[in-house]
Length: 211
Image 1: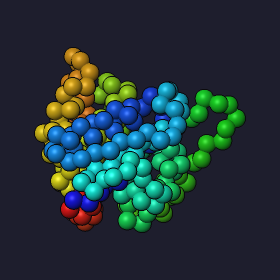
Image 2: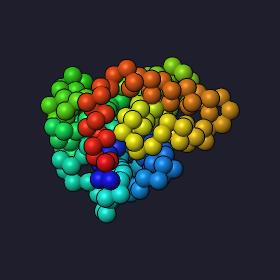
Image 3: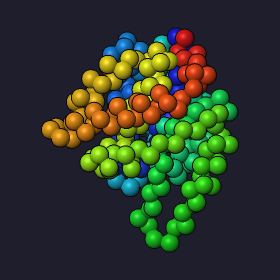
Image 4: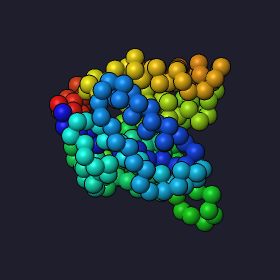
């Protein structure tokens, strides 16, 4: 088994570390070795966050070099662009279609379309997911990471990193009562969206990294 390199990014408070843990625990349940490292940024609300997730029996070091990421999964557009140097033309990017304005005044935000174009140019394929919008509509405004986990699970599940039942078991432990039920729905929405959008060649590309 080789190594699959996944770079996660976002803004503190969006649940990036939770997303990393969901991916990691699901893979471990499938007996796939995992290394996770938060290497930059502040995980408190509002700070830039990047987490390296490496899956596979060939993993020896926790950090991913620039241009060596196989997948970039980001919960915010600008943060995706910030860490896009980790991508290559053989990488895929899965990005929450959301811009978060910084709390610092007088900072000019880039235009959404400009950010999207940068991501398209730096990756083999870009998948935009309105994860935050979906989560807000379903009653869990901070559940965008669960939608994204569902989306990623479709890809990683078909690639052999873990199976959907293992991922569902991890999601079932998120929240209580109504929120727990909403999270299960958000996961399913993300999973089904990926099943409609992600092509077999993309799955084969990711699967090859784990064989």
